[in-house]
Amino acid sequence: MLKKHSKFFESLLLLLDWLIISLSWVFSYYLRFYSGIVPVYKGIPPLKSYLTLLIFMIPLWGMVFKMFGLYRPRRISTKISEVIDISKSSTFATLIVISLTFLFRQYEFSRLTFFYFWLINTIFLSLTRIMFREFLRFLRKQGYNLRYALIISTEKLGQDLVNKLKKHPELGIRISGFLTRDMDSAGNKIQGIPVLGKYSDVRSLISKHKIDIVFVALPFSVHHQLKEVLDWIGDEMVSIMVLPDISDFVTLRGSVSEFEGMPLISLRDTPLYGWNIIVKRLLDIIFASLVLTFASPLMFIIAVMIKLTSEGPVLFKQERMGMDGKTFHILKFRTMLINAEQVTGPVWTKEDDPRRTRIGKLLRMTSLDELPQFFNVLKGDMSIVGPRPERPVFIESFKGTIPKYMLRHKMKAGITGWAQVSGLRGNTSLEKRIEYDLYYIENWSLNFDLKIIWLTLLNGFIDKHAY
Image (tube, rainbow, N blue to C red; front, side, top):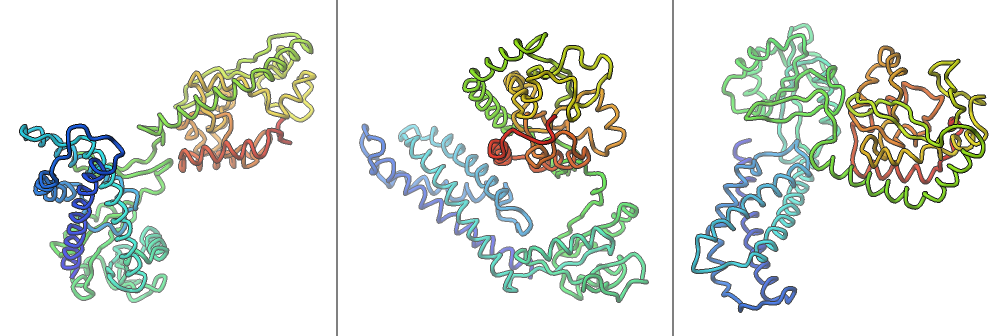
C-alpha cells in the first residue's frame, strides 16, 4: 500500500511539473516577444520552434528532478528545503538546455527567454509544490493518507519522538507501538501507546500491523545492537529511520549532512559560512559606516570633553577574546583614570566606582563610551550583533566554572547582543547571559540581527547595570 501511494503521488507530481514547465516556457516566449518589456529588433521567431524544444525539456526536467530527490516522499522535510532543491535542479536543467541549444547552429534561441523561463518556472514549481504539500497535510489531519510506524525502544529518545510527532499531525504518522529490550514492560502502555513486544519480534509485527515506517531509537548504551535489529527487520518493505542517541553530545547547531553517500553528524558548528558570512559582514560595514558618519560630531565633542576633564589619552585599548578564541584590542572612549587597575588588578567596574572620571560615569551609563567599537567592526574584529567580548584574564576563570562558556566564541563578538537587549548587562547572571548568547548562535539569522538592532535603538542606551 505504501509503494502504491508513493507511485501515485510521484506520477501526479510529475504530470503537474510537466504542465508548469510547459506553461512557463510558453509564457516566457510571449513575455519576451509580445510584452514590449524589451524591444525586439531581429523579428519574432515562430512559436513552433520554441515548442519543439519542449520535447527535450520535459523529460530532462523529470530526470533532473528525480536525481535531486524531488519525487521521493517528503513527510518530514521542510518547505524551504524543497524550494532550495527545486531552485538547484531547475537551474541545473536550464543550464543543460542552454548548452544544448548551442548545438542547433541553424537557429538561435533568445537568452532573455531562458532567463524569464528560469525565474517563472522556479517560482511556480515552488508554489505548486507548497500547495500540493499543504493539501496532503490537510488530508492527513483529517485521517487520510496515513503511515503507521513502530518505535524500537521504550527509552527517552523514543518517547521524545512520540511527543514531537503528536505536535505535527499534518505528517500523518501514527505510532502503532513500541518494542522493548525485555518482556517486563511488554503489554504496558507508554503515553497511551502499547508496548507490543521485544526487538526480535519486529518482523512479525510489521506484517501483523501493516507497518510502513520503523524508527530505530536505541539508547547510546545499546547502540551495538543496531546491526542485530536491522537483521531482524530483514528485507521487509518498510522505511527505516535511525535516531542516533547523541543529544547529550550536541553542544551548538547540531546538524546532519552527507558526503559521498556517507552521513555526517555535526555536534558543534558556527552559523557563519557561505552566504551567511557575506550577508552579516555587509550589514556590519553598512551600519558601522552610517553610525560613524552621523555620530562623528558627537564623538568629537566627547573626545574634547575627555581631554578637558582628565589626563590621558582619549581612547582606551583593552585585550578581548573574539571568534574562535582569537584576541583583539577593543576600542572605547576612556572613562577611567590612568592606571586604574594598578592597585586593584583586573576587576569589573562596580556601582559608584571611584576610578571613573567625571565624564566617565555619564559615558558608561549611556553606552556612548562604546562608539569607537564601530571601528573594530569595520576592521573585522567585531560585529554589530553578537556575544559581548570578555577579557582573557576573566575567561580563564569562567571557562572552568561555567558550562559551555567557550562556545560563545563560535560567533564574532558584538557591540550589542540578545543578552544585552534582554536586560542582561553589567552585574547580572553570567550563566543567564551564556544561555542567551548560545540561543542567539543557535538561532542566528539576518532577521534576528535586525530585531536585536531595532530593540537596542528602541530601548535606548541607558541601563541601570551599566557602571
